Length: 147
Length: 473
Image 1 (tube, rainbow over the protein chains, first blue to last red):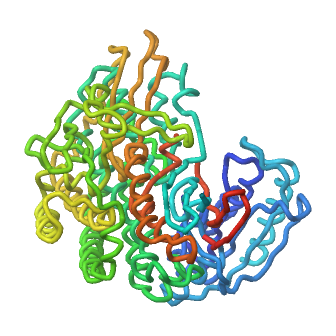
Image 2 (cartoon, chains in turn orange, purple):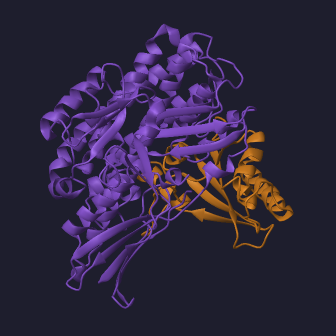
Protein backbone atom coordinates (compact mmCIF):
# COMPACT_ATOMS: atom_id res chain seq x y z
CA UNK A 1 0.00 0.00 0.00
CA UNK A 2 1.42 3.42 -0.87
CA UNK A 3 -0.06 6.84 -1.16
CA UNK A 4 0.72 10.49 -1.43
CA UNK A 5 -0.62 13.08 0.91
CA UNK A 6 -3.93 14.36 -0.30
CA UNK A 7 -3.84 18.02 -1.21
CA UNK A 8 -7.29 18.44 -2.60
CA UNK A 9 -9.33 15.94 -0.66
CA UNK A 10 -9.55 13.43 -3.52
CA UNK A 11 -8.60 9.85 -2.66
CA UNK A 12 -8.24 7.12 -5.26
CA UNK A 13 -8.39 3.48 -4.16
CA UNK A 14 -7.50 0.90 -6.79
CA UNK A 15 -7.89 -2.71 -5.76
CA UNK A 16 -7.35 -6.16 -7.19
CA UNK A 17 -4.83 -8.94 -7.45
CA UNK A 18 -1.62 -8.10 -9.25
CA UNK A 19 -1.18 -11.79 -10.00
CA UNK A 20 -4.49 -12.40 -11.78
CA UNK A 21 -4.02 -10.65 -15.11
CA UNK A 22 -6.58 -7.89 -15.67
CA UNK A 23 -7.59 -7.91 -12.01
CA UNK A 24 -4.59 -5.59 -11.59
CA UNK A 25 -6.45 -2.84 -13.48
CA UNK A 26 -7.50 -1.14 -10.23
CA UNK A 27 -4.04 -0.90 -8.64
CA UNK A 28 -2.53 0.03 -12.01
CA UNK A 29 -4.98 2.91 -12.49
CA UNK A 30 -4.34 4.10 -8.92
CA UNK A 31 -0.58 4.23 -9.49
CA UNK A 32 -1.03 6.17 -12.73
CA UNK A 33 -3.23 8.68 -10.95
CA UNK A 34 -0.63 8.99 -8.21
CA UNK A 35 1.81 10.11 -10.89
CA UNK A 36 -0.51 13.05 -11.47
CA UNK A 37 -0.20 13.95 -7.79
CA UNK A 38 -3.45 12.48 -6.60
CA UNK A 39 -3.59 10.71 -3.28
CA UNK A 40 -3.89 7.05 -4.22
CA UNK A 41 -3.89 3.61 -2.62
CA UNK A 42 -3.07 0.48 -4.62
CA UNK A 43 -4.19 -2.52 -2.62
CA UNK A 44 -4.84 -6.20 -3.09
CA UNK A 45 -8.22 -5.98 -1.44
CA UNK A 46 -10.31 -3.53 0.58
CA UNK A 47 -9.82 -3.81 4.33
CA UNK A 48 -11.54 -2.02 7.23
CA UNK A 49 -8.62 0.30 7.97
CA UNK A 50 -9.17 1.97 4.60
CA UNK A 51 -12.36 3.40 6.12
CA UNK A 52 -10.21 5.70 8.21
CA UNK A 53 -8.43 7.03 5.12
CA UNK A 54 -11.71 7.40 3.29
CA UNK A 55 -13.19 9.35 6.18
CA UNK A 56 -10.49 11.97 5.80
CA UNK A 57 -11.26 12.54 2.11
CA UNK A 58 -13.76 14.84 0.41
CA UNK A 59 -14.22 12.57 -2.59
CA UNK A 60 -13.28 8.91 -2.94
CA UNK A 61 -12.93 6.98 -6.18
CA UNK A 62 -12.90 3.20 -5.99
CA UNK A 63 -11.38 1.58 -9.08
CA UNK A 64 -12.02 -2.07 -9.82
CA UNK A 65 -11.79 -4.52 -12.71
CA UNK A 66 -15.17 -5.90 -13.80
CA UNK A 67 -15.76 -9.04 -15.80
CA UNK A 68 -19.39 -8.06 -16.40
CA UNK A 69 -18.65 -4.95 -18.47
CA UNK A 70 -17.68 -4.93 -22.14
CA UNK A 71 -13.86 -5.21 -22.18
CA UNK A 72 -12.25 -1.81 -22.52
CA UNK A 73 -15.38 0.04 -21.38
CA UNK A 74 -15.73 2.02 -18.15
CA UNK A 75 -18.71 2.72 -15.95
CA UNK A 76 -19.13 5.13 -13.05
CA UNK A 77 -21.71 4.89 -10.29
CA UNK A 78 -22.35 6.82 -7.11
CA UNK A 79 -21.99 4.92 -3.84
CA UNK A 80 -23.99 6.07 -0.85
CA UNK A 81 -22.71 3.77 1.88
CA UNK A 82 -26.01 2.02 2.47
CA UNK A 83 -25.41 -1.64 3.06
CA UNK A 84 -27.91 -4.44 3.02
CA UNK A 85 -27.41 -7.77 4.75
CA UNK A 86 -23.88 -7.96 3.43
CA UNK A 87 -20.92 -8.02 5.72
CA UNK A 88 -17.22 -7.79 5.96
CA UNK A 89 -14.80 -10.50 6.91
CA UNK A 90 -11.30 -10.25 5.60
CA UNK A 91 -12.46 -8.17 2.69
CA UNK A 92 -14.77 -5.22 2.41
CA UNK A 93 -16.90 -3.55 -0.22
CA UNK A 94 -16.82 0.16 -1.17
CA UNK A 95 -20.30 0.60 0.33
CA UNK A 96 -19.23 -1.20 3.49
CA UNK A 97 -16.19 1.04 3.88
CA UNK A 98 -18.31 4.16 3.43
CA UNK A 99 -20.73 2.82 5.99
CA UNK A 100 -17.84 2.39 8.40
CA UNK A 101 -16.49 5.84 7.59
CA UNK A 102 -19.88 7.25 8.60
CA UNK A 103 -20.59 5.14 11.70
CA UNK A 104 -17.05 4.99 13.09
CA UNK A 105 -15.57 8.32 12.03
CA UNK A 106 -18.66 10.44 11.41
CA UNK A 107 -17.63 11.26 7.85
CA UNK A 108 -19.59 10.91 4.64
CA UNK A 109 -17.33 11.59 1.66
CA UNK A 110 -18.76 11.70 -1.82
CA UNK A 111 -17.86 8.36 -3.39
CA UNK A 112 -17.79 6.81 -6.83
CA UNK A 113 -17.13 3.31 -8.06
CA UNK A 114 -15.43 3.17 -11.42
CA UNK A 115 -15.60 -0.24 -13.02
CA UNK A 116 -13.22 -1.18 -15.79
CA UNK A 117 -14.31 -3.82 -18.28
CA UNK A 118 -11.77 -6.65 -18.34
CA UNK A 119 -11.81 -10.23 -19.51
CA UNK A 120 -8.57 -11.98 -18.67
CA UNK A 121 -8.22 -13.07 -15.07
CA UNK A 122 -5.89 -16.02 -15.37
CA UNK A 123 -2.82 -16.31 -13.15
CA UNK A 124 -0.04 -14.05 -14.43
CA UNK A 125 0.95 -10.41 -14.55
CA UNK A 126 0.37 -7.80 -17.23
CA UNK A 127 -2.85 -6.30 -18.55
CA UNK A 128 -4.64 -7.22 -21.77
CA UNK A 129 -5.03 -4.52 -24.44
CA UNK A 130 -8.68 -4.13 -23.45
CA UNK A 131 -7.79 -3.66 -19.80
CA UNK A 132 -5.12 -1.12 -20.74
CA UNK A 133 -7.77 0.81 -22.68
CA UNK A 134 -10.13 0.68 -19.70
CA UNK A 135 -7.41 1.87 -17.33
CA UNK A 136 -6.64 4.84 -19.59
CA UNK A 137 -10.31 5.78 -19.72
CA UNK A 138 -10.70 5.43 -15.96
CA UNK A 139 -7.67 7.64 -15.37
CA UNK A 140 -9.09 10.30 -17.69
CA UNK A 141 -12.46 10.06 -15.95
CA UNK A 142 -10.96 10.69 -12.52
CA UNK A 143 -8.65 13.44 -13.77
CA UNK A 144 -11.53 15.21 -15.47
CA UNK A 145 -13.43 15.17 -12.20
CA UNK A 146 -10.44 16.16 -10.07
CA UNK A 147 -9.62 19.12 -12.28
CA UNK B 1 -27.38 -41.32 10.64
CA UNK B 2 -27.71 -37.79 9.30
CA UNK B 3 -25.07 -35.21 8.47
CA UNK B 4 -24.77 -31.41 8.84
CA UNK B 5 -22.13 -29.60 6.79
CA UNK B 6 -20.81 -26.09 7.52
CA UNK B 7 -19.21 -25.23 4.23
CA UNK B 8 -17.27 -23.08 4.35
CA UNK B 9 -16.48 -21.83 7.84
CA UNK B 10 -16.48 -18.01 7.75
CA UNK B 11 -14.34 -15.25 9.28
CA UNK B 12 -11.23 -17.40 9.18
CA UNK B 13 -8.25 -17.34 6.82
CA UNK B 14 -8.77 -19.83 4.01
CA UNK B 15 -11.30 -22.54 3.28
CA UNK B 16 -12.64 -25.21 5.58
CA UNK B 17 -15.70 -27.37 5.95
CA UNK B 18 -17.21 -28.93 9.04
CA UNK B 19 -19.31 -32.05 8.91
CA UNK B 20 -21.53 -32.95 11.85
CA UNK B 21 -22.93 -36.47 11.90
CA UNK B 22 -26.15 -36.84 13.88
CA UNK B 23 -28.26 -39.83 14.76
CA UNK B 24 -31.96 -40.24 13.96
CA UNK B 25 -32.87 -38.47 17.20
CA UNK B 26 -30.86 -35.39 16.22
CA UNK B 27 -28.00 -35.97 18.64
CA UNK B 28 -24.43 -35.34 17.49
CA UNK B 29 -22.41 -38.51 17.10
CA UNK B 30 -19.15 -37.25 15.62
CA UNK B 31 -17.67 -34.30 13.74
CA UNK B 32 -14.97 -33.68 11.17
CA UNK B 33 -12.98 -30.56 10.30
CA UNK B 34 -11.81 -30.63 6.69
CA UNK B 35 -9.28 -28.25 5.19
CA UNK B 36 -10.08 -28.22 1.52
CA UNK B 37 -7.19 -26.41 -0.09
CA UNK B 38 -3.68 -27.43 -0.99
CA UNK B 39 -0.82 -25.21 -2.16
CA UNK B 40 2.36 -27.26 -2.32
CA UNK B 41 5.08 -24.81 -1.28
CA UNK B 42 7.24 -27.62 0.07
CA UNK B 43 7.31 -29.26 -3.35
CA UNK B 44 7.61 -26.39 -5.79
CA UNK B 45 10.44 -24.73 -3.88
CA UNK B 46 12.65 -27.74 -4.57
CA UNK B 47 15.57 -26.55 -6.67
CA UNK B 48 15.29 -22.88 -5.68
CA UNK B 49 18.30 -21.20 -4.05
CA UNK B 50 18.00 -21.25 -0.27
CA UNK B 51 18.30 -17.47 -0.02
CA UNK B 52 15.06 -17.07 -2.02
CA UNK B 53 13.10 -19.01 0.58
CA UNK B 54 12.21 -16.11 2.89
CA UNK B 55 10.66 -14.12 0.03
CA UNK B 56 8.92 -17.18 -1.46
CA UNK B 57 7.51 -18.63 1.75
CA UNK B 58 6.33 -15.21 2.96
CA UNK B 59 3.81 -15.45 0.10
CA UNK B 60 2.15 -18.31 1.95
CA UNK B 61 0.28 -15.70 3.92
CA UNK B 62 -0.83 -12.08 3.78
CA UNK B 63 -1.60 -11.94 7.50
CA UNK B 64 1.53 -13.38 9.05
CA UNK B 65 4.22 -13.13 6.36
CA UNK B 66 6.63 -11.83 8.99
CA UNK B 67 6.49 -15.14 10.83
CA UNK B 68 7.37 -17.02 7.66
CA UNK B 69 10.09 -14.51 6.84
CA UNK B 70 11.61 -14.95 10.27
CA UNK B 71 11.44 -18.73 10.46
CA UNK B 72 12.75 -18.99 6.93
CA UNK B 73 15.54 -16.48 7.48
CA UNK B 74 16.55 -18.37 10.63
CA UNK B 75 16.71 -21.62 8.66
CA UNK B 76 18.90 -19.81 6.14
CA UNK B 77 21.10 -18.44 8.95
CA UNK B 78 21.66 -22.08 9.95
CA UNK B 79 22.55 -23.09 6.39
CA UNK B 80 25.09 -20.27 6.32
CA UNK B 81 26.18 -21.31 9.83
CA UNK B 82 26.24 -17.70 11.00
CA UNK B 83 25.25 -16.04 14.23
CA UNK B 84 23.48 -12.87 13.18
CA UNK B 85 24.54 -9.56 14.77
CA UNK B 86 22.76 -8.88 18.08
CA UNK B 87 21.15 -5.74 16.70
CA UNK B 88 19.72 -7.75 13.81
CA UNK B 89 18.15 -10.15 16.29
CA UNK B 90 16.68 -7.21 18.21
CA UNK B 91 15.27 -5.67 15.04
CA UNK B 92 13.79 -8.97 13.90
CA UNK B 93 12.09 -9.34 17.28
CA UNK B 94 10.78 -5.76 17.13
CA UNK B 95 9.30 -6.39 13.67
CA UNK B 96 7.79 -9.57 15.05
CA UNK B 97 6.13 -7.60 17.85
CA UNK B 98 4.51 -5.35 15.23
CA UNK B 99 3.30 -8.41 13.37
CA UNK B 100 1.81 -9.98 16.49
CA UNK B 101 -0.03 -6.78 17.37
CA UNK B 102 -1.58 -6.34 13.93
CA UNK B 103 -2.53 -9.99 13.62
CA UNK B 104 -4.01 -10.23 17.12
CA UNK B 105 -5.93 -7.00 16.46
CA UNK B 106 -7.34 -8.47 13.24
CA UNK B 107 -8.38 -11.65 14.99
CA UNK B 108 -9.97 -10.00 18.00
CA UNK B 109 -11.53 -6.83 16.61
CA UNK B 110 -12.48 -7.81 13.07
CA UNK B 111 -13.14 -11.53 13.23
CA UNK B 112 -14.23 -12.51 16.72
CA UNK B 113 -15.54 -9.29 18.29
CA UNK B 114 -18.84 -9.55 16.38
CA UNK B 115 -19.52 -12.83 18.22
CA UNK B 116 -18.16 -11.58 21.51
CA UNK B 117 -19.75 -8.14 21.63
CA UNK B 118 -22.94 -8.59 19.61
CA UNK B 119 -23.67 -12.11 20.83
CA UNK B 120 -23.46 -15.58 19.36
CA UNK B 121 -27.21 -15.58 18.67
CA UNK B 122 -27.43 -12.05 17.28
CA UNK B 123 -28.76 -11.37 13.78
CA UNK B 124 -26.23 -13.02 11.45
CA UNK B 125 -26.78 -10.26 8.88
CA UNK B 126 -25.36 -7.78 11.42
CA UNK B 127 -22.92 -10.06 13.19
CA UNK B 128 -19.89 -8.64 11.44
CA UNK B 129 -17.61 -5.66 11.66
CA UNK B 130 -20.26 -3.38 10.09
CA UNK B 131 -22.79 -4.34 12.72
CA UNK B 132 -20.11 -3.86 15.33
CA UNK B 133 -19.36 -0.41 13.94
CA UNK B 134 -23.00 0.59 14.46
CA UNK B 135 -23.16 -0.59 18.06
CA UNK B 136 -19.61 -0.09 19.28
CA UNK B 137 -17.90 2.44 16.96
CA UNK B 138 -15.24 3.13 19.56
CA UNK B 139 -14.21 -0.54 19.57
CA UNK B 140 -13.94 -0.63 15.79
CA UNK B 141 -11.96 2.62 15.86
CA UNK B 142 -9.57 1.11 18.38
CA UNK B 143 -9.23 -2.07 16.35
CA UNK B 144 -8.35 -0.17 13.21
CA UNK B 145 -5.87 2.03 15.07
CA UNK B 146 -4.14 -0.88 16.82
CA UNK B 147 -3.81 -2.92 13.65
CA UNK B 148 -2.55 0.14 11.80
CA UNK B 149 0.09 0.67 14.47
CA UNK B 150 1.35 -2.89 14.10
CA UNK B 151 1.44 -2.58 10.33
CA UNK B 152 3.29 0.72 10.59
CA UNK B 153 5.95 -0.91 12.78
CA UNK B 154 6.47 -3.57 10.12
CA UNK B 155 6.54 -1.02 7.31
CA UNK B 156 9.00 1.26 9.07
CA UNK B 157 11.36 -1.45 10.25
CA UNK B 158 11.19 -3.88 7.35
CA UNK B 159 10.23 -1.82 4.32
CA UNK B 160 6.66 -2.91 3.46
CA UNK B 161 3.51 -3.79 5.41
CA UNK B 162 2.77 -7.16 3.83
CA UNK B 163 5.79 -8.80 2.25
CA UNK B 164 8.70 -6.63 3.37
CA UNK B 165 12.14 -7.05 1.81
CA UNK B 166 14.06 -6.04 4.94
CA UNK B 167 14.39 -9.46 6.62
CA UNK B 168 17.14 -11.41 4.88
CA UNK B 169 19.35 -14.44 5.54
CA UNK B 170 22.06 -13.24 7.92
CA UNK B 171 20.03 -10.47 9.55
CA UNK B 172 18.43 -7.29 8.24
CA UNK B 173 18.92 -5.49 4.94
CA UNK B 174 19.30 -2.06 6.52
CA UNK B 175 19.99 -0.67 10.00
CA UNK B 176 17.47 1.38 11.92
CA UNK B 177 17.39 5.14 11.65
CA UNK B 178 16.88 7.00 14.92
CA UNK B 179 14.06 9.12 13.44
CA UNK B 180 12.16 5.93 12.56
CA UNK B 181 12.69 4.58 16.05
CA UNK B 182 11.44 7.81 17.58
CA UNK B 183 8.36 7.84 15.38
CA UNK B 184 7.41 4.33 16.50
CA UNK B 185 8.02 5.15 20.14
CA UNK B 186 5.77 8.19 19.78
CA UNK B 187 2.88 5.95 18.74
CA UNK B 188 3.34 3.41 21.50
CA UNK B 189 1.37 5.11 24.30
CA UNK B 190 -1.81 5.22 22.21
CA UNK B 191 -1.38 1.61 21.13
CA UNK B 192 -0.81 0.48 24.70
CA UNK B 193 -3.84 2.44 25.84
CA UNK B 194 -6.00 0.64 23.27
CA UNK B 195 -4.69 -2.76 24.31
CA UNK B 196 -5.36 -1.99 27.97
CA UNK B 197 -8.88 -0.70 27.59
CA UNK B 198 -9.81 -3.52 25.21
CA UNK B 199 -8.71 -6.11 27.72
CA UNK B 200 -10.48 -4.27 30.53
CA UNK B 201 -13.66 -4.18 28.44
CA UNK B 202 -13.36 -7.83 27.47
CA UNK B 203 -13.11 -8.85 31.12
CA UNK B 204 -16.50 -7.21 31.74
CA UNK B 205 -18.26 -9.34 29.13
CA UNK B 206 -16.60 -12.66 29.94
CA UNK B 207 -19.35 -13.75 32.31
CA UNK B 208 -21.81 -13.63 29.41
CA UNK B 209 -20.03 -16.62 27.93
CA UNK B 210 -20.08 -19.23 30.67
CA UNK B 211 -21.59 -21.95 28.43
CA UNK B 212 -19.06 -21.22 25.71
CA UNK B 213 -16.17 -21.21 28.18
CA UNK B 214 -17.32 -24.63 29.38
CA UNK B 215 -17.75 -26.14 25.92
CA UNK B 216 -15.26 -24.40 23.62
CA UNK B 217 -12.54 -27.00 23.74
CA UNK B 218 -12.32 -27.21 27.52
CA UNK B 219 -10.30 -30.40 27.43
CA UNK B 220 -7.00 -31.85 28.56
CA UNK B 221 -4.21 -31.59 25.99
CA UNK B 222 -0.53 -30.86 26.02
CA UNK B 223 0.72 -27.33 25.25
CA UNK B 224 3.74 -26.28 23.20
CA UNK B 225 5.56 -22.96 22.94
CA UNK B 226 8.90 -21.18 23.04
CA UNK B 227 10.39 -20.07 26.34
CA UNK B 228 13.54 -18.18 27.28
CA UNK B 229 16.25 -19.09 29.75
CA UNK B 230 14.15 -17.91 32.69
CA UNK B 231 11.08 -19.73 31.43
CA UNK B 232 9.63 -16.48 30.15
CA UNK B 233 7.45 -16.06 27.08
CA UNK B 234 9.49 -15.81 23.92
CA UNK B 235 8.20 -15.17 20.40
CA UNK B 236 11.31 -14.83 18.23
CA UNK B 237 13.66 -17.34 19.77
CA UNK B 238 14.08 -19.69 22.75
CA UNK B 239 13.66 -23.37 23.51
CA UNK B 240 10.58 -25.44 22.70
CA UNK B 241 8.78 -26.46 25.88
CA UNK B 242 6.18 -29.23 25.92
CA UNK B 243 3.83 -29.14 28.91
CA UNK B 244 1.34 -31.78 29.95
CA UNK B 245 -2.32 -31.07 30.60
CA UNK B 246 -1.52 -31.05 34.31
CA UNK B 247 1.24 -28.48 33.86
CA UNK B 248 4.37 -30.65 34.12
CA UNK B 249 7.19 -30.06 31.67
CA UNK B 250 7.33 -33.14 29.43
CA UNK B 251 10.30 -31.93 27.40
CA UNK B 252 12.28 -28.77 26.74
CA UNK B 253 14.42 -28.92 23.65
CA UNK B 254 16.59 -27.02 21.25
CA UNK B 255 14.35 -26.20 18.23
CA UNK B 256 16.78 -28.11 16.00
CA UNK B 257 15.64 -31.30 17.74
CA UNK B 258 11.95 -30.83 16.87
CA UNK B 259 11.73 -33.89 14.61
CA UNK B 260 12.47 -36.17 17.55
CA UNK B 261 9.45 -34.85 19.41
CA UNK B 262 6.88 -33.83 16.80
CA UNK B 263 5.35 -36.36 14.42
CA UNK B 264 2.93 -35.56 11.59
CA UNK B 265 -0.05 -37.80 10.79
CA UNK B 266 -1.73 -37.57 7.39
CA UNK B 267 -5.53 -37.52 7.46
CA UNK B 268 -7.62 -39.06 4.70
CA UNK B 269 -10.31 -36.33 4.79
CA UNK B 270 -8.20 -33.17 4.99
CA UNK B 271 -5.19 -31.58 3.33
CA UNK B 272 -4.08 -30.46 6.79
CA UNK B 273 -1.72 -32.83 8.58
CA UNK B 274 -2.11 -33.57 12.28
CA UNK B 275 1.08 -33.09 14.31
CA UNK B 276 1.39 -34.89 17.64
CA UNK B 277 3.88 -35.32 20.49
CA UNK B 278 5.95 -38.25 19.32
CA UNK B 279 6.86 -39.78 22.69
CA UNK B 280 3.15 -40.34 23.35
CA UNK B 281 2.09 -41.07 19.77
CA UNK B 282 -0.92 -40.37 17.56
CA UNK B 283 -3.58 -39.31 18.44
CA UNK B 284 -2.98 -39.33 22.22
CA UNK B 285 -0.10 -36.87 21.74
CA UNK B 286 -2.57 -34.07 20.95
CA UNK B 287 -1.29 -30.63 21.88
CA UNK B 288 -2.24 -27.00 21.44
CA UNK B 289 -0.15 -24.01 20.31
CA UNK B 290 -0.82 -20.28 20.06
CA UNK B 291 -1.54 -17.55 22.60
CA UNK B 292 -3.27 -19.72 25.21
CA UNK B 293 -0.69 -22.49 24.90
CA UNK B 294 2.16 -20.00 25.16
CA UNK B 295 0.76 -18.55 28.39
CA UNK B 296 0.28 -22.06 29.78
CA UNK B 297 3.81 -23.07 28.84
CA UNK B 298 5.66 -19.97 30.05
CA UNK B 299 6.41 -19.27 33.67
CA UNK B 300 5.87 -15.57 33.10
CA UNK B 301 5.71 -13.02 30.30
CA UNK B 302 8.78 -11.10 31.38
CA UNK B 303 7.32 -7.60 31.06
CA UNK B 304 5.59 -5.82 33.95
CA UNK B 305 2.15 -5.03 32.55
CA UNK B 306 1.70 -8.37 30.81
CA UNK B 307 2.83 -10.22 33.92
CA UNK B 308 0.27 -8.34 35.99
CA UNK B 309 -2.43 -9.42 33.56
CA UNK B 310 -1.11 -12.96 33.45
CA UNK B 311 -1.31 -13.22 37.24
CA UNK B 312 -4.94 -12.07 37.17
CA UNK B 313 -5.69 -14.51 34.35
CA UNK B 314 -4.27 -17.39 36.36
CA UNK B 315 -5.97 -16.32 39.57
CA UNK B 316 -9.27 -16.35 37.71
CA UNK B 317 -8.92 -19.53 35.64
CA UNK B 318 -6.00 -21.53 37.11
CA UNK B 319 -2.34 -22.09 36.31
CA UNK B 320 -3.20 -24.19 33.28
CA UNK B 321 -6.17 -22.74 31.43
CA UNK B 322 -7.81 -25.43 29.35
CA UNK B 323 -10.78 -23.78 27.60
CA UNK B 324 -9.94 -22.69 24.08
CA UNK B 325 -12.43 -19.83 24.51
CA UNK B 326 -9.63 -18.17 26.45
CA UNK B 327 -7.47 -17.88 23.35
CA UNK B 328 -9.17 -14.47 23.03
CA UNK B 329 -8.10 -13.38 26.52
CA UNK B 330 -4.59 -14.73 25.99
CA UNK B 331 -4.37 -12.89 22.66
CA UNK B 332 -5.06 -9.57 24.38
CA UNK B 333 -2.46 -10.24 27.08
CA UNK B 334 0.03 -11.02 24.35
CA UNK B 335 -0.80 -7.75 22.60
CA UNK B 336 0.12 -5.92 25.81
CA UNK B 337 3.31 -7.97 26.07
CA UNK B 338 4.32 -7.24 22.49
CA UNK B 339 3.86 -3.50 22.92
CA UNK B 340 5.90 -3.50 26.12
CA UNK B 341 8.59 -5.66 24.58
CA UNK B 342 8.70 -3.42 21.52
CA UNK B 343 9.31 -0.44 23.77
CA UNK B 344 12.09 -2.28 25.62
CA UNK B 345 13.81 -3.15 22.36
CA UNK B 346 13.51 0.31 20.84
CA UNK B 347 14.73 2.05 23.99
CA UNK B 348 17.92 -0.01 23.98
CA UNK B 349 20.61 2.17 22.37
CA UNK B 350 22.11 -0.91 20.71
CA UNK B 351 19.07 -1.06 18.40
CA UNK B 352 20.72 1.70 16.34
CA UNK B 353 23.97 -0.21 15.72
CA UNK B 354 24.81 -0.14 12.04
CA UNK B 355 26.06 -3.75 11.84
CA UNK B 356 22.92 -5.76 11.10
CA UNK B 357 23.89 -8.45 8.61
CA UNK B 358 26.25 -11.42 8.57
CA UNK B 359 27.34 -12.67 5.16
CA UNK B 360 28.45 -16.18 4.27
CA UNK B 361 28.10 -18.91 1.69
CA UNK B 362 26.60 -22.34 2.20
CA UNK B 363 28.27 -23.91 5.22
CA UNK B 364 25.72 -26.53 6.27
CA UNK B 365 23.55 -28.95 4.34
CA UNK B 366 20.54 -28.43 6.57
CA UNK B 367 18.84 -25.57 8.40
CA UNK B 368 15.96 -25.33 10.86
CA UNK B 369 14.26 -22.06 11.77
CA UNK B 370 11.61 -21.74 14.47
CA UNK B 371 9.56 -18.74 15.63
CA UNK B 372 6.21 -18.18 17.28
CA UNK B 373 3.70 -17.06 14.66
CA UNK B 374 0.57 -15.29 16.03
CA UNK B 375 -1.28 -18.61 15.90
CA UNK B 376 1.53 -20.72 17.35
CA UNK B 377 4.91 -22.22 16.75
CA UNK B 378 6.18 -22.20 13.17
CA UNK B 379 8.89 -24.51 11.87
CA UNK B 380 10.82 -24.19 8.61
CA UNK B 381 13.25 -27.00 7.84
CA UNK B 382 15.35 -27.09 4.64
CA UNK B 383 17.98 -29.39 3.16
CA UNK B 384 20.23 -28.01 0.41
CA UNK B 385 22.81 -29.33 -2.02
CA UNK B 386 26.38 -28.05 -2.19
CA UNK B 387 25.25 -25.08 -4.30
CA UNK B 388 22.55 -24.11 -1.86
CA UNK B 389 19.62 -25.36 -3.95
CA UNK B 390 16.69 -26.66 -1.90
CA UNK B 391 16.58 -30.47 -2.01
CA UNK B 392 13.80 -30.91 0.57
CA UNK B 393 11.61 -28.64 2.67
CA UNK B 394 9.24 -29.24 5.53
CA UNK B 395 6.99 -26.53 6.98
CA UNK B 396 4.97 -27.18 10.12
CA UNK B 397 2.50 -24.33 10.55
CA UNK B 398 0.73 -23.15 13.69
CA UNK B 399 -2.76 -24.10 12.55
CA UNK B 400 -1.48 -27.57 11.68
CA UNK B 401 -0.28 -28.07 15.24
CA UNK B 402 -3.80 -27.24 16.43
CA UNK B 403 -5.55 -29.52 13.95
CA UNK B 404 -6.34 -32.31 16.39
CA UNK B 405 -7.40 -29.82 19.06
CA UNK B 406 -9.68 -27.92 16.64
CA UNK B 407 -11.30 -31.21 15.68
CA UNK B 408 -11.87 -32.18 19.26
CA UNK B 409 -13.17 -28.69 20.16
CA UNK B 410 -15.69 -28.81 17.30
CA UNK B 411 -16.96 -32.11 18.60
CA UNK B 412 -17.33 -30.78 22.13
CA UNK B 413 -19.17 -27.64 21.02
CA UNK B 414 -21.40 -29.59 18.66
CA UNK B 415 -22.41 -32.08 21.31
CA UNK B 416 -23.18 -29.24 23.70
CA UNK B 417 -25.06 -26.86 21.42
CA UNK B 418 -26.29 -28.59 18.26
CA UNK B 419 -29.66 -30.36 18.24
CA UNK B 420 -30.38 -31.29 14.67
CA UNK B 421 -34.11 -31.72 15.20
CA UNK B 422 -34.36 -27.98 15.94
CA UNK B 423 -31.54 -26.53 13.93
CA UNK B 424 -30.84 -22.84 14.64
CA UNK B 425 -28.24 -20.54 13.15
CA UNK B 426 -26.80 -19.63 16.55
CA UNK B 427 -25.96 -23.26 17.27
CA UNK B 428 -23.90 -23.55 14.15
CA UNK B 429 -22.34 -20.14 14.66
CA UNK B 430 -20.86 -21.50 17.87
CA UNK B 431 -19.31 -24.35 15.94
CA UNK B 432 -17.68 -21.81 13.63
CA UNK B 433 -16.79 -19.58 16.57
CA UNK B 434 -14.75 -22.27 18.29
CA UNK B 435 -12.70 -22.58 15.13
CA UNK B 436 -12.26 -18.78 15.09
CA UNK B 437 -11.04 -18.90 18.69
CA UNK B 438 -7.94 -20.63 17.38
CA UNK B 439 -7.63 -17.87 14.73
CA UNK B 440 -6.66 -20.54 12.22
CA UNK B 441 -4.80 -19.55 9.11
CA UNK B 442 -5.64 -22.34 6.70
CA UNK B 443 -3.90 -20.52 3.90
CA UNK B 444 -0.74 -21.01 5.89
CA UNK B 445 -1.43 -24.45 7.18
CA UNK B 446 -1.81 -26.05 3.79
CA UNK B 447 0.78 -23.73 2.53
CA UNK B 448 -4.94 -19.90 -0.13
CA UNK B 449 -7.11 -17.24 0.73
CA UNK B 450 -10.72 -16.35 0.26
CA UNK B 451 -14.00 -16.11 2.04
CA UNK B 452 -17.47 -17.04 0.91
CA UNK B 453 -20.88 -17.34 2.52
CA UNK B 454 -21.56 -20.05 5.06
CA UNK B 455 -23.95 -22.81 4.11
CA UNK B 456 -25.18 -25.41 6.55
CA UNK B 457 -27.00 -28.42 5.29
CA UNK B 458 -28.81 -31.10 7.19
CA UNK B 459 -28.69 -34.23 5.11
CA UNK B 460 -30.66 -37.39 5.78
CA UNK B 461 -29.41 -40.93 5.78
CA UNK B 462 -30.26 -41.37 2.11
CA UNK B 463 -28.61 -38.07 1.15
CA UNK B 464 -31.82 -36.03 1.08
CA UNK B 465 -31.66 -32.36 2.16
CA UNK B 466 -33.63 -32.10 5.40
CA UNK B 467 -32.80 -28.52 6.39
CA UNK B 468 -30.58 -25.68 5.34
CA UNK B 469 -29.27 -22.55 7.05
CA UNK B 470 -27.20 -19.98 5.19
CA UNK B 471 -25.71 -16.61 5.91
CA UNK B 472 -23.53 -14.01 4.22
CA UNK B 473 -20.01 -13.30 5.26
